[in-house]
Length: 226
Image (cartoon, rainbow, N blue to C red):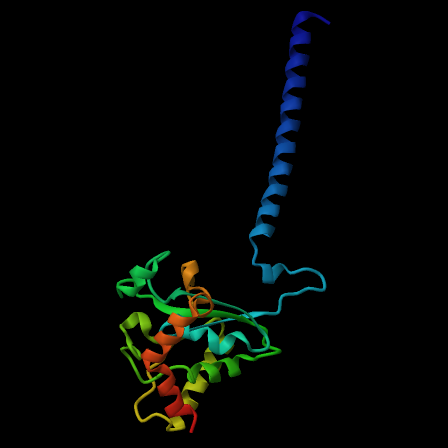
């Protein structure tokens, strides 16, 4: 084999090796991409064999979110309750920003529940019993759009159930004023700062005093505990 032939053979071998290396990288890249997709899929969608996550989300605004945790937390089928902010335009808002009323967000709670143990209809019934649905300016002593009431539905079934329950409440004539609670699609929910989570457990004395002073319990007693 002359020198020119040897040179061409070496170049061919190098090209072949390079092509094989690129093919291997491509295959590894595809595997990595597929793994990344699996890792970013919602946990409820992936699940595990025999352990499918059948829980659902419900999101409600009812004024101060401290007071919207305790009515739901001990019920069967309630997996978790998170206090947070939703319904506005500001990304990753802080409590002080929401409190200013400039973010468009409302204080809210997001409840993860098991519908076979506590269906959405019952969540709605309990929700209505915690609020003044005729107040468009806030709730009790907390004033401003950040304390408005609202049902944020996560699917069409929730929307239909929420609108039906609102019509039924209006038809009951329990309240003389119109029901103004908004029913809107659920958007991004931003969990509140850690010190707001389970506030009634972390600061029980202040929570009880704040709730008492708000007038919420007096309103509930007058309208629901005849």
